[in-house]
Length: 165
Ligand SMILES: CC(C)(COP(=O)(O)OP(=O)(O)OC[C@H]1O[C@@H](n2cnc3c(N)ncnc32)[C@H](O)[C@@H]1OP(=O)(O)O)[C@@H](O)C(=O)NCCC(=O)NCCS
Image 1: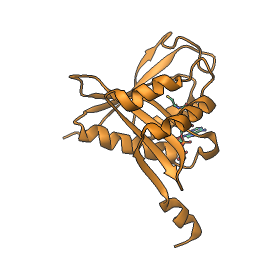
Image 2: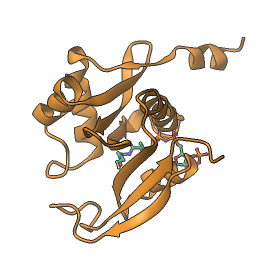
Image 3: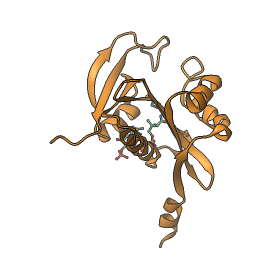
Image 4: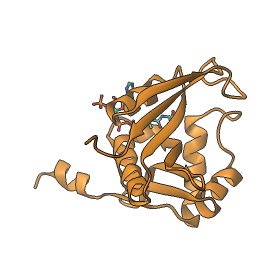
């Protein structure tokens, strides 16, 4: 096994817990400007109290990224609330691995679709979602309260979590 392969195997995806909230909030702040970042209290709620899947990716105990999916009662759609990778560790497949792990969790909960909203100018994220099999369902004019990358408009993307017969 080469050094690179050994490094790869130390990447772990696990459920987020209360001890992760500080670092998750810091990552959120590095990924989004103050007005658009989820506040720490809301992240804590989503992770600890909401009906959600909250996962972190770690390497050698360093949290490099996280994803939060929420569920609504009676719905078969898992909503990807946010996925963030610490900028120091972007473009290392952390994001796509987190998304795949969250989709497995959604399937285990019986969800039939994964859905999300993303700023229509967030090219890295849109590209990630398209690579993972999401397609654009709808354009949402004025979706965000504050501008993301100079626009309040978003797109809703969706992915079926079942194989077509
Ligand atoms: C979007 C984000 C989560 C991607 O995470 P990541 O770990 O860097 O992405 P990955 O390394 O897993 O890349 C997977 C795919 O995403 C796309 N992608 C990732 N970064 C990209 C970039 N800067 N530009 C274009 N495409 C990009 C590519 O299709 C890539 O596949 P490839 O490597 O074969 O080209 C990360 O850029 C991030 O945290 N951004 C800030 C927070 C954010 O905008 N979150 C989304 C909220 S809706």
